[in-house]
Image (cartoon, rainbow, N blue to C red; front, side):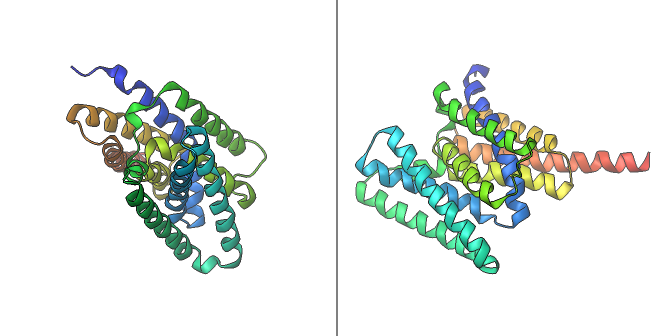
Length: 248
């Protein structure tokens, strides 16, 4: 029989990631830069991959990921100001370039870094990895509810890069993208409050972790699929409740 204890830490990590990623994802959709999260996640993974070739210590790898992601954030802020009409295409090109460079480096080192950066290993999270996720979640929440504007480009891009970098090693690029976009899309399409997005997101993480353990499936892929399913169920439920309220 599968123990619920096995998903407590992965679920805690998922909740912390959602606390920071959902408000940022809403901003991403509002700005129309959907490729941004993929590009930042891939930049963070590539920065860690390059650093690992020379400094295999985890702290140096994390620093390399943050550094390259912050450079990418500065570049995106620059092109958003001067090339707004071509911004999404340029960000897409950056993402593809990072993926290909990562694949080349991975083939040269005969490793599996590119595979890990895509899928992550959230089921094997340890308590120490929750600390930076908790810190960045607090930072995003404090920024959102303070007088500081999260929508400000000066603050948004570095905060986005930091949040994505801290989560990509644990979640992988695909799950980072889904955590940012799927609940935020639910919120914007259905015009529902943030708590609906959090509810659907947490449900998706819980169901995905359980499914991965039960069927021995890849955790990241399982959570991505369940995030989409719970978002669809939440959208249909919220729309149904709204219609009932209108006719009552």
